[in-house]
Length: 294
Ligand SMILES: N[C@@H](CCC[C@H](N)C(=O)O)C(=O)O
Image 1 (cartoon, rainbow, N blue to C red):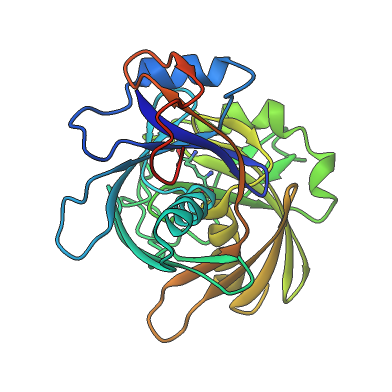
Image 2: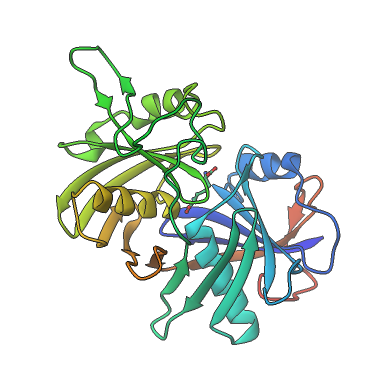
């Protein structure tokens, strides 16, 4: 059995699973079973494995609740940092994911910053299925041709694909549960995409709701908050340092000028611990009580 901690990052439901010292992985079937159980229901699993590269603390494998893999999960990374900080007393960590190397640190006040790396705008790297020379506002619309409900999203990758639809009204007034799955699976996104609705409140503040690829409506999506902040700055809507209000609360995002990296800062919260079978998802209390996540 692998120890796990049920945690959340601003209401983004996360299972941090300790796979260190093992050579198996959390199976998609196990993820689907755990997501279907109301006690362990999650948006993402962050599976911590032994490092694959010198100088890193762990390899982190990210699974969505539909069992698919994700390249990035900002809120989940903060949960991993909090779990490992509690275990080791350390505050600074370096992780490797399929998207690359990430640095993260816990601050004195308990908030956690993750360096999410540089954004990617090239259409074939987002990826999109056809060429767009400028991804600041691509041609895509939902609704009638003369009065589209949503249109002209900014698209980019923060390690994972994001489409940000800019709106003038309250972000809660859009039926994201209906449009989200349609847009997630739109043929323009060959690897699907995370779909967000964003409203700029000032040059320092954005409201955001996200339909997550492979997980559905969430209370928070860190990489979407980073994508909204970057896309807003890139289109002249805001400056490079903003607060992004997601349903779970505010995230501080800075798109750093000096190295093009995006820094996301916010909280992480532990809920309960247990142990699970990574093959089947069968779980119970952790009787061994080992490690940070137990
Ligand atoms: N909750 C995440 C993003 C999770 C991955 C996403 N659903 C995908 O498949 O790309 C975050 O906080 O960034």
